[in-house]
Length: 166
Image (tube, rainbow, N blue to C red; front, top):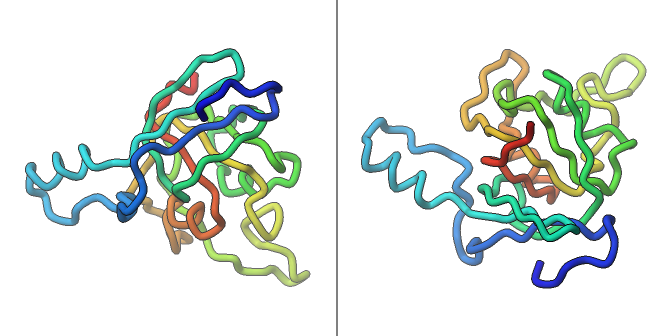
């Protein structure tokens, strides 16, 4: 964002340098140090700008787009899929304070016996964006069918990681 917003509701971030780039949400599959270094240097950089002029630098995952919204936080240690689909966070940018997010991926959109979402609070992500400290590119859980970054991208939601969320 190039200008300071006139209200807290207009806080947000800009993704820098993603035009024409493929998403870098997947680590290289081989273990060559040069490939890993190239991947680390190619991650999309982005900035979270607050209404008071503070900026936080990080890396983009999920959808590559700029958003604005009220920044709020969640201190939960688990259940990030449930938090992201909670309608009470509609239109907000959620800071998840737990330091590692994405480590168990995202389950399916499966319905239960009452035709309600088995794993989520609602049928879609209601947030405008997600802010986390460390993003796990390689989730591991029996119910995982996609990464957090893939899920965010599929619903047009950007995320930033590499930010101190304490």
